[in-house]
Length: 387
Image 1 (cartoon, helix red, strand yellow):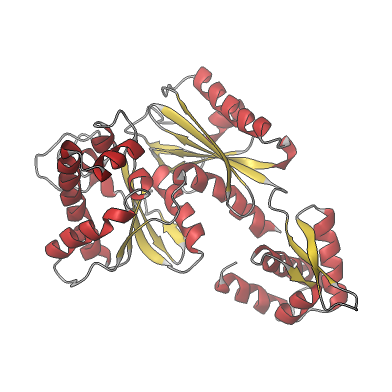
Image 2 (cartoon, rainbow, N blue to C red; image 1 turned 60 degrees about the vertical axis):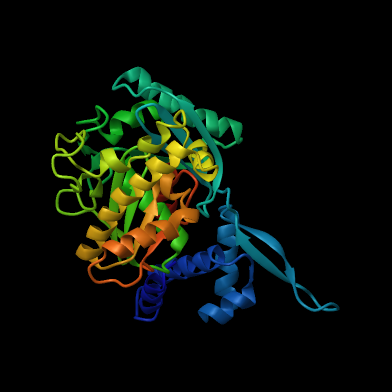
């Protein structure tokens, strides 16, 4: 829970709110305190929240009965009665995320902490067909079966897609890469069999990054370098989607006038210069293999990488001029480029108008299937907020 959310709940609790509402607020405060700590006792809760022990005991019992928390140990001095401690039951509920791309489907399973429990990735050509949607349902059921998850414990399935989606995460409003126009969450839901929400891939990845940051950086710009290039603006720890759901579309920032053809119909966009496929075309489609080649100083890999960074630096420089905020490099490329950030920063600094350093620039912290994980995290976040 953020400091803002915590302070809001505390004000509500102390503002003459009706008793039944106070009960719900107290449970939320207790549950979130347990979520944010590896182990807490009743006394810890009393000290932190200034609640009576009977109130704490009643809420602890309710949360135990719901299976949301578990007794995790004891604390205290030897010779006296040791106090029970409690922690979150991470597997009480799970969420599933899918990263849908042109040639593959990646499925992840998340627990209530947002940790990735399992990952399945398969090669599968995208098709706008009933059979393809049935296949997505099979992917979901397979990962649940492999990890012995009961259907009743599944919060929902988030889809991360290379398309623009609306604020309700129920409609695709623009799709230039895959034939997804006019598809809805309900279309997928009929085949998958669980509640479904559909998210723009860059926004989903940014959401995963914000979860990892835990409020330590509340404003910034996330550049997603995957099989397509996307971006997301975040302010006050929330993704800003814009009036028409197009905010942050850095992949369509023109960096070379009359340059390479982009799938959007324009020429010179960042996407055809800095998508991961620019790199993986040298390594049989594997991003990890490309970075192995780069580490081994393969001549062609080094040449392509140097050009790639020069093009990326133009975009970083322009985003910085526009937003004057921290910039995070994410996606499948960003997850691998920590060893090369100093090289990128040098190029960016050379092109900078105002900055004498590039300390505002860093690689992402959430590195494991951020698109799929971020899509699933929306269900986890909503569930935790509802307790």
